[in-house]
Amino acid sequence: MEHDIDTDIDTGARERGARRDEAVAAAVEQGLLGPGAPLVGLLDVTGIRESAAELRAAFEAVAAPGTPVLHAFAVKATPLVPVLRLLWEEGVGAEVASPGELALARAAGVPSTATVLDSPAKTPAELREALALGVAVNADNPQELDRLDALMRTASSGSPLGIRVNPQVGGGSIEALSTATATSKFGVALRDEGARQWVVRAYLERPWLTRLHAHTGSQGIPLTLMAHGVAETYALAEEINARVGRRQIDTLDIGGGLPVNFASDAATPTYAEYARLLAETVPGLFDGRYGLVTEFGRSLLAKHGTVVARVEYAKSAGGRPVAVTHAGVQVATRTVYAPGAWPLRIAAYDAKGRPKEGPAVVQDVAGPACFAGDLLAREQALPLLEQGDHAAALDTGAYYFAHHYAYNSLARPGIYGFAPEGEKGVAFAVVREPQTLAEIVAESGGAHAEALTTLRASGRG
Ligand SMILES: *Cc1c(COP(=O)(O)O)cnc(C)c1O
Image (cartoon, rainbow, N blue to C red; front, side, top):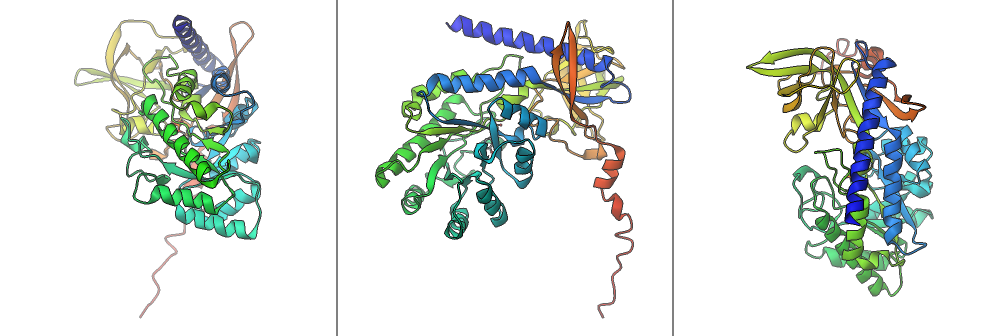
């Protein structure tokens, strides 16, 4: 059995790598990538569909038949309307955390019944809109619950409402992504003095609070710690329902946070592994008494995105080869600023986009931005990149090229989805057009060129 699972993982990795290789070559051949368009983001539509199907299957395998399960994709991971539409077609809704993300989900056609609003800083206007739309809301703190109270007094809403708690089970290897530390800014810190009693009372006093939410993410958190966070949340729901004397909390939102393997093509850990661990750790979660919401982001998309950049120049400094490419801090912000926490694998392709052969040479892969640390990879062993070749940053489908950072006014690259077509062919679809120079000027105050020179201090006496 274990052997079969490993074989599946290997096969998936091989097929994903083969699809990527074909797409890079086709992108060069079809002119999406070349001297005039030296940077693109590519999305593997087949892979995205497969991951969505694996997610659904993993929870179906452990949940009692008929258990309502909403998988809500954390939009922040890949905030692109066509991606949200594709996921919705695959039965995956949206977890949103800002007015912008809510607008993207709506533009993609994700219904409000499949949308969850979680942000930590919701304004009264945002809360009012969410309730008017019927979007599920998890209140982050007592002050937000006050605002919900006021809204619920004046209007009825179909929105399922809950409270987000922080089980404070501890952090992982990446401090900035650990949401369940003692001092995390998210949710009601459950182990603080009086907090648990406050939460229980909040439910006792509000029959319309029917959900409980925790997200013990994210990258860098061991699975056992994530499961521990879910177990604490489940225990609290059981305590609340016992106190109320009825099944007031009918749905548990267990968040996302499944880590991604950035070290190889293997998509591990798997959703199936996590779902089985949850079933072992918190058996009651799946016995049909609770509906479930999940909020996975990175694990659904990371493996299916690739940044491909042309090597503009190949040089050498202090004896080390440096490939100067068009992908740097603007598309790989986390990697450039925190290379220890976010290393990326680079694949070398030749000028025609074919996998580059040759002995591995330790080299740096640099970006186009004007500061020394703008490196996509340091001392990586790859076939020597030469002028006109291509460097591909792998596993960048989440939190990378969809998160443009406008350093040096570098343009947002075009993003294209791809799928196999016919014998060895590849079809592309535009997901996002490349940003034009006119757009950069317009977004940088181009319409207000005179604004500052005409603003003069006038006599204040
Ligand atoms: C970021 C976030 C997620 C998604 O985390 P991933 O690590 O991308 O799976 C889910 N829920 C909430 C509340 C988040 O903030």
